Amino acid sequence: MSSRPKVILTIAGLALATPVAAQTSAFDGKYAGVSADVSKYRSSGERCPREHVPDPLTITNGAVHSAARDRWTGTVDAQGGLVIRNRRAMRVNGQIDPQGTIKGEYHGPACIVTFVWRKQS
Image 1 (tube, rainbow, N blue to C red):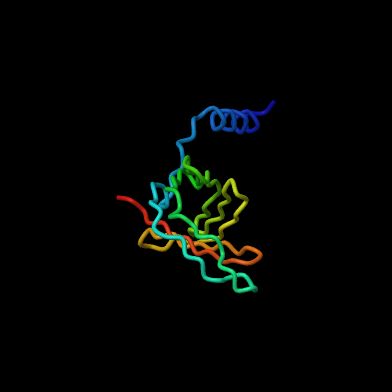
Image 2 (cartoon, rainbow, N blue to C red):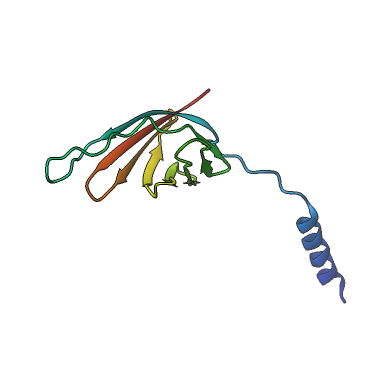
C-alpha cells in the first residue's frame, strides 16, 4: 500500500476515535409555561375545553421534552423552529424569538390553542 492511502486511513481512524463534544444550541435551557389561549370555538357555539398553563420545557441539543403531565417531546431546528407533541397527540408548531419566548399553535378540528413559554435565566 502506498503512503498516501495509509495517511488517509490513519486520519480517518483518528477522526472516528476522537470523542465529539456535545453540541449545544443557543436555544438550550429551561422554559416556563406562560399561557395557553383558545382562539377558536366549535361551530355550534360550544366553547372548546380550557387549557392549563403549559408544562415547563427543557431544550438540550435541539431535543425538547417535559416531565410533567403533558409530557411534551419534539425538536428545535437551528433557526428556532419548534415542533412538539404531547401525550394527548396535540402537535404544536412554534418559533423561539431572540428574547427566548416560544410561541406555538395547535390547530385542532374545532379549536386553535396558542401556547407561550419563556426562557428562564
